[in-house]
Length: 554
Ligand code: GLU
Image (cartoon, rainbow, N blue to C red; front, side, top):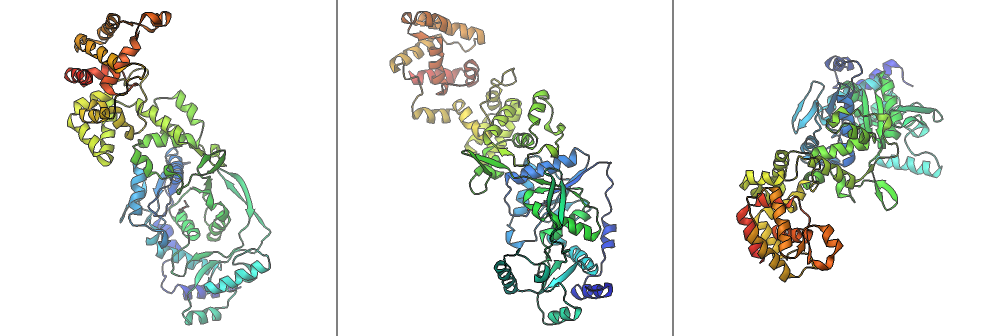
């Protein structure tokens, strides 16, 4: 064991250029002035460019915790592992989250830009800070340099395997833990690279309980491994960096994936060594998926819906995804939504204690249904604007059509919208083209070239006859009731029953019923058997086109 003077000497030896002190940073980043109970949370991704659904889920949890408590939410980029960094990764993360309406109060806003006074928020720009605190730990006797090469570590591992012991750098295997100053000096004079390790307490039997806000009390062994704090390139490991950052950025709640749960004892240890107030921890279980009868993690490799850009490409409104995720965070949201159909989902308060411990089950079908409901309640204007924006990026043909005559395009979306029972044909903007195609001759003509979808049981001769007769009686100026009355009269005139009941009573007496006739007209107009209100469609299409389509078929 070194004494205090020796620790100081060692610290100066290892960090000769570090002159700032922890106090300097404590003053620079004072305790935040926030209302009582306000939570400070963060999302801390590595800039790999890919945003997994699980990350969006976790960031939503963090965002809601902060904002529902009048707290603050920030974005920190954890880019100290250069191998994982991807060009454009930061921009992609910020943009992706923004699209879902996740906004940060502080932190990185793009490459080279950030906001907030607790930065820099990019770990690669904080190396000076980490060194100050690393030096401080050495001074306190809680950290030391380790000069082991890769080869040395392999030897230790082999020995431990042979002896059937825990693998790692600890106890008697921590060969540099008790190096004297002289020995350190000698290694340094030989320019040996070193990592900085924590000097963990050696009580392998001592247990540690983490009071996790999601998982409850989790009992684990106390950390006895001398984990690496600074790598040989001087960059910090996640363990060290996040402790320093979360302290200086005054994070109150560390919400993160539960892959970090096993290292929580080390993190808590570090907070204690620094004599810092510990944040609360909430370890979020991964988002799961049902495959056959078994549950597995939603996988980047296997599931396209694991990548949040999938939702953008398919045109799911951000709000649909968020609404679904709130539901996944707390299942009682569903009931709340039923009772409060019009309120923004931000009025629902999430509770960590109600989150799934085993992992929430992600279900794209349910998400799609929620999205259908949400779009069904949107105004015609919203649907027009949002699908136009989507089409601009993903479907230039649709974009041009929607833009050609805005009034016309909007009147399409007005059909069956706004009433008691709005139709739910659209769950994402990708559905818009198949929904609107028959309003545009160029798309409709292409579609009928592949064949008309008339009911097989009615012969083409009859279809032509019905349409030819109908073209003679059709009056574009009819209102809806007049239109339908005329259709019914027309049915009687050509040997069809004007309602289904009569037909069922005496099928022999008729060629078919009114549903068959409107079915024929519907296919002639739209080439689909199931559409929104036929009268409205014909009104929007316009007289010229209605007559044209009837004749084309004839
Ligand atoms: N950078 C870590 C990760 O990618 C962040 C974990 C945390 O939120 O502390 O998982």
